[in-house]
Length: 65
Image (tube, rainbow, N blue to C red; front, side):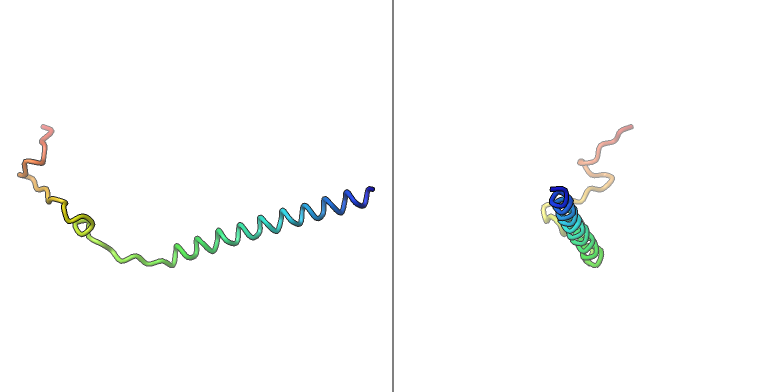
């Protein structure tokens, strides 16, 4: 009876360790993939063609004075 409980605890511990090891490895691989990813810089005006340019004398600007 004692050996069965120790064997079960050893098996459960090994299984938990394996699951955590695999999860940690996948997380690190995901971080590596993200750090190697290169995104070309884009202008904010190219993001939405309906954006309007706001200048100092524009009626869209409010003066907080």
